[in-house]
Length: 584
Image (cartoon, rainbow, N blue to C red; front, top):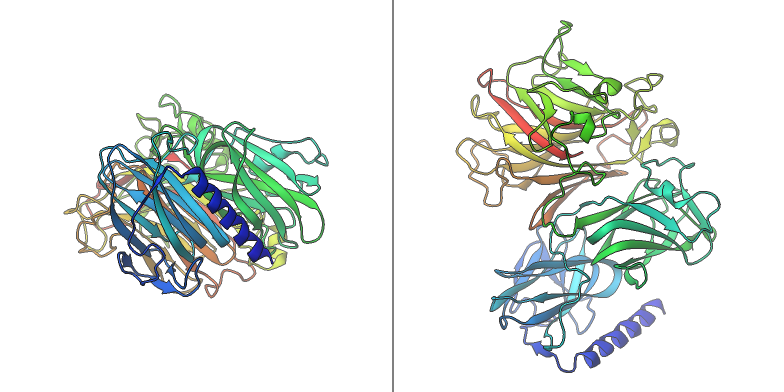
């Protein structure tokens, strides 16, 4: 009955749109509903034709990160157009030309119409496409409409940047009917049960102000008692906090996790994001521990240059003046205290203005510079390479917690035993960083030259993930890949951009030195997701299943690391790796 009701609603809305656009002109597409399989489309695996359709007997199906299909279409210059399609599951539709690069994503379990509007500019041809977006999806009934001269593209304030970063939230408010657990508790970076928003009743809302018009793409929510009950909710966005547009209907949590859970939204240009609570599987309470909103800011197709608090980086300040460093320690490849290993600066010292050029300092653009030479002190006898690297410390200077162990200083997977989750400092985690690699080694063994680790999760003895940047001396661009190391097992490699080979060709879509990009490492239970984000390019997403990796057993604790870990000990002594971070 729900499916039938939704289909009637969508058909009604389609009729309304058709009536409103009686003066618009449909552009002829080849095989827009895939009834003739891939005729008129070029496709990239993993893609296939599905018998589950919105209309007719077939649809396009995308099941993996590289899946995509596209069609070239002739259009008129200096005209306005609307592209739409019906999507079931997860997916993204988009349009590219010499003057346009726009996309719209979907993430609903039922067929939902997705659309975007654009101006053609000087272009007389475009490429329309459907592609993978964080999960399996089906696509059907593409339409391209040339709008009448009276109509103009209406996307709020259209923003076409393709980066997808955690957006600063200026404030959180509700209607004042909470039980004393106010909305501000959902943006304090605290996932404990005592820091939450709770409001009783169907239709209760919590509204987030991003401070400026932004392209809103995803939302992540950690639910109070999220491992005991399923929360039901909707998400809406607005440019003025008065008129609201639905971007996620019939949303629901997993009911099995206290961790942040990510939900793709219909992309929209908005300043305000509102969650409409519809109770949970046990009662009509709506209770949220923490919320993050993902997208990109108005006026910049660039990755934002900030420290996560929407403040401009000041090159006259030490690193702790631009970045919150009280929840990190720092290792640098020198041994000033003569204890035979690399020096470590603890949380309180690091957050009190510590700076040590050339290993750790504020750069001329305000970014945080990490440098590590080939020759230098190591952190332990088990380490072969030097590093200038931060180590996450949830204790924030409270030395009553030991550095190691399942305790308040470290976190565990939500798949860990309940006893470990009860005493750990966190459950699951997300690390985001915006950076540019400035220099890599150019001397030494061919198996080591040009490679550096820029972010990782460390466990007791192994690393669930290590993200590598590698640029070979003969190449102008570098590759990105990551390794997943099962507990006590051998590394499993995932190539995201280019190849990790020591003789790799120059990657066509690689990242140059000093080119800014972002990464996100996200763990939810036994699922590891790594995302690479760049200006003007689609996100690249890879997922590793850690079900059999041995980290969901008792005693396994986790912490993030970020900086430069120079994986070259055969080059010239003064050769080095360097990166500048703009957000951690």
